[in-house]
Image 1 (cartoon, rainbow, N blue to C red):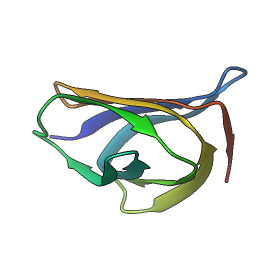
Image 2: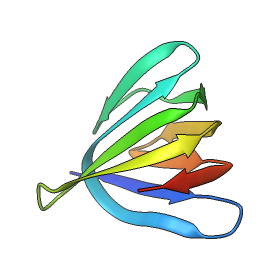
Image 3: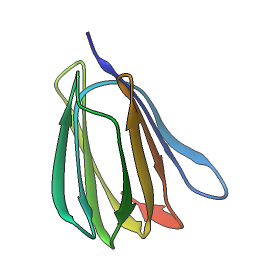
Amino acid sequence: MALNVELVSPTQRVWSGEATSVSARTIDGDLGILTGHTSLFGVLVDGVVSITSVDGSTTDFNVSGGFLSVSNNRVSILTETVAN
């Protein structure tokens, strides 16, 4: 089973697909998300969001603020700006 992940900014869908893990930094600290993770909502701080796709490759994105939501193996990341 994989995570269904979407990373979006106000102007574009930056990354979308299946992943084995996601890591991000929130105001409460660093998060590591794997399949089966409990539902949560977090406020992102400026930093790196790392997404490891099912093929094993990891992509890092520099984000400026935003939100992260996890529910039923779906991860939605909404950020103000993003660069990779």
